[in-house]
Image (cartoon, rainbow, N blue to C red; front, side, top):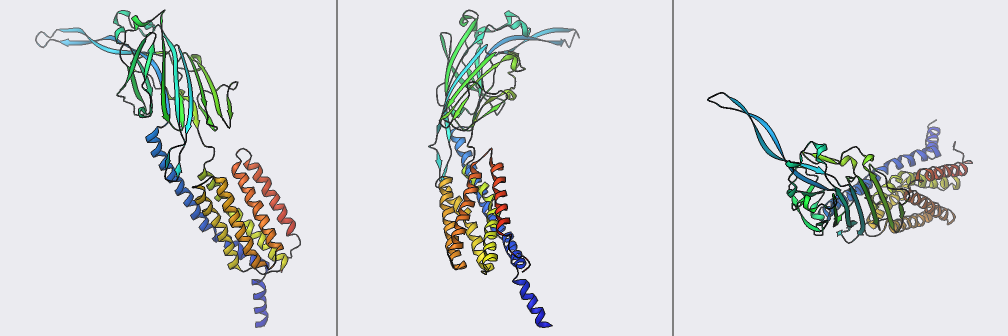
Amino acid sequence: MQENQITETKSFLQSNTAKMIMVGFLTLVLLIPLFFVQDLIRERSQRKSEMVDEVTDLWGKDILFYGPMLRVPYTSYENFSVTDTKTKVTTIEKKATTSYAYFFPNELTNTSNVKKNESLKRGIFNHVVFTANMNFKGNFANPDFSKLGITEENMQWDKATILVKTTNLKSIKSELKIQLNNEKLIFEPQNSNKSDYCILASNPFNYKQLARGGKVDFNFSIIYNGSNSIKFIPIGKITKVSIDSDWDSPSFEGSFAASHNTKDVSHKGFHADWKILDINRTFSQQYIGAAPFLDDYQFGVKFIKTVDEYQQNERASKYGFLVIGLTFLIFFLIQSISKINIHIFQYSMIGLALIMFYTLLISITEHSSFSLAYAIAGSSVVGLITLYSVSILKNRKFPMFIGVALSVLYTFIYVIIQLEDYALLVGSIGLFAILAAVMYFSRKIDWNK
């Protein structure tokens, strides 16, 4: 009776069911080092983000341009009551104060040429930034103060200025001068109550003397060092923006879409045009008191990397469980078909070799391209497991099959990582094909043994 129990116990431990349970448990255990690898990838990605913040702070951040606008001061009067303490007689007096009226351009045209700069590097990290050469031209129509309820005699025409609001003054790399008809004015920075904007103001000029035919033409250029994005506020009654760049992965953002007729994106760069009319937005062309906050109307382009090396590494690591599971399944099917016994320790060595793929991948990627790192890491791991399986399986037929199967699997995952729009479709079809192959090769295995 005791001998029968020992025989039954040995039979169960050597059965396919027991082996499958042990392999499945080992697969779950190997998720622990895989999670550590994913944490390593996130840590390296965080270090790069810190480097990007440092570089962009020194070189230049996002560019947001709001202007130019005409500011004309005027005299306003405020009534207040004065009571004589002795006679108790109250009189009404007027106090003169200076207020400001703001007028937006009648026409505003911008032409920008953006060149990427890949020379900035911190340690092993390299962040791509750009230099933007921007030209603005247009005109201001004769201001109509009657709409604002201001009389002509209260206007201080000789103290008119041109204002520009922008971000990150230290990224401007050219002297900023504006041509107003036949006069040149120089911009100087002013204090701003809003931390997200910096204000540049021209030296005062006499608008009445400068105006020609009821309008003032303007023209100026500016060179920016920047990163991430360039955006504008469409304050012109007619606003036109044209951007050319050698950046091949733009993202057009904001409240207004680029023209589909002229937009062109290729591996050499992109061209985009915008034309926005005053009827396309809900704010006026003139204001009193203070220039309005119009960030909700911004538009432009964001310069992005579709998938950077750390995103690719993170996506690759998410398929780690699939790679480990399918590799163990291949060995388990070979073991079941060939009746060759594979020890759980040998499964462990194979699993650790698969984990090493991701540490090799992230370390090599930081010193080369992701594609080259993937090829080196994949070839190394496939070669190692193939050679190891020769000693396990005692022949060359099955190890060659394993080498080919792993090569196909890693190639399949690489293709999914590179795809964007069709990643889910290709992945689903590939997993269906893998499932069909497993069902086919396992159809004759007697699972009752």
